[in-house]
Image 1 (tube, rainbow, N blue to C red):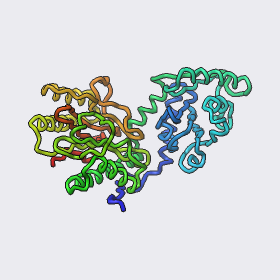
Image 2: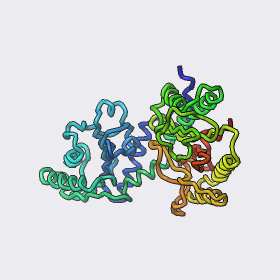
Image 3: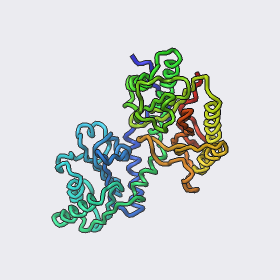
Image 4: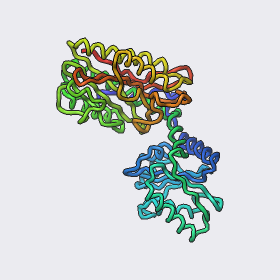
Length: 406
């Protein structure tokens, strides 16, 4: 039996769960408005093996393996691998089986352009945008297939095929960075379960029921699924003192002692309705050396001072620069960014680093990590990571990860 209770934090909608279908339609309509403003008639998304794109789930609710077309008029056509799943989970205008198109993305896109019954009336000349991850040979195949199809149907006679790093797919990424009410509801459920796991992990370490990296990782896996999670957001990273010098330890966990004397790191997240959490604990088991104590102090100080800069309207780079300056004054360097957005993926835009343009600011609705860390092969590593919701008034720390002294 699970030791966790599945929490249901208030969503702001009469205390109940927001209706996903309503939010999916809002997202589709908001994206259609962007298409119309940029004179793009159709946007094509691909979430398949080798080219994953969480925007498909973001716009439709379909968890994976599907193609998606959204038009500037707000029409949405989903072409899933699993039709039964799509009919149960997706909110779109049309669901067309991938098998109807020979399970071929090129064929799918070119043939659907002829389907007025799904796309509506299109102009004689249209702009169609492909995902920026599309390889050039695939782009050429799309061009050729579309040209051939246009000769045999009364659909658009000319298609301007676009594939750009800074195109409308990037607009979708930026949309996903500002979480709506439904997303915040899911994230708060995930972070509440995460906090319960943190308590179980600390209890297990203190009572001796957790003695290895494997123990910690499997407890997270078992308990999160028993609590109704889809799984972990990424492979759990559990590193005892001999391996905690790695930013992301390799392998992710072993049968090695955890925690042992020194500094140990545990990095994990859990997924609720597609949305992950992401936290890192450091276990400090004494006696510690002066260098280890100083490293813990630096990371905690950096965390405390950066948190004051995670506020709406403040430049994202400012927080990263502040932490870099704290570490530099002590002769140390942090080898990774200070944080990142997350949601349907463990790493999303924005990244909290000094190279961000000054115009990139924290905005209400962003959920970003704050995770200063220092690592040294001779003394081990320390990282402190929590999930931060940017609010109109400032911020809300969603998780209770910390440096745990043993």
